[in-house]
Image (cartoon, rainbow, N blue to C red; front, side, top):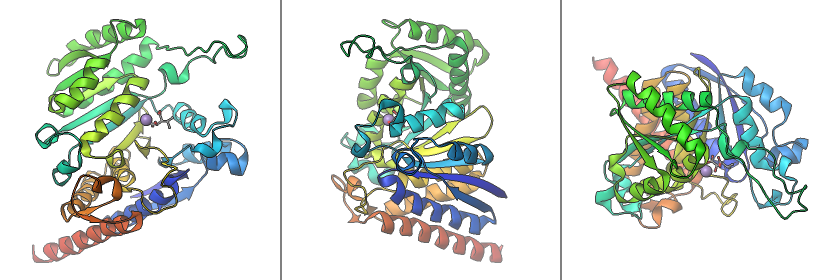
Length: 370
Ligand code: IPM
Ligand code: MN
């Protein structure tokens, strides 16, 4: 298979974690005989510094010409004072909107060997395997501009708007995914307060009869936040609007032990997608070689699975990550409470690539005997 991948490392640790992820992609390509053509472009603060815009036209054009996009992270204190329409985060929001990436899939899976790295009790996080489906191109993130100028800075407004059609397409994703997993869908909203949430609930109830095998429940977002800490195993697929999904996914990352472990896929209605870690640019540790590259590496696996339908290849990456963790290697974020050998970004990358190469060699030997 031949595919073109647009690579946008972005800011902070985005640059460091992307290098290793590309090595992993190459190792899998060599193993299975695929060639991935890589072309890099700027986004976020990095793009602002080099071109004056957080999402330059060339970057968007490259993404549109590619089969998938890999993104590191955007933002940092360096750009805190730039006008709001030029903020690095605007580049990220714009690319999501321009490419119509409305479905953000965030799997949260507890790795057996990392149970001790979670601040939650082992018996609570053991066997957690859930997916947060976050609406990504609507809601508060894309409201009308604030009223700051008109009111001399004394009032600020953010608007939360959802069209029925926007809710329908993301809720459908939730049902479909639940149907492929454990047939349980939790729709998270704030219907006791927000009108947009009441519309959301109506859409879920309207669609439910089309998926009779899926058990559906509605849950208020505050309750969902509590249950994620108290009994996360009860969840299979959780579908929710943009801002709630943003907050709940950071919270859920603690089940895995670190925000540095969570990958994500942002999908359009076809197989095109953008793949990025859930974490941000971590400016405090950027350039120090300490960042956990696993969320980025696991995002490569999601790209292979969702955009290229290369399921075995994706599984091999996930297995290599698991094997490296089982062997006791940990980046600093996971070391805090866990036990093992502390390694930096490059070593962790190398360990995963070596694992893949070793698994590849082993599979060739086995194939020769079969
Ligand atoms: C995320 C990030 C972004 C978001 C920021 C960087 C704009 O937190 O992908 O979760 O809020 O969507
Ligand atoms: Mn976030």
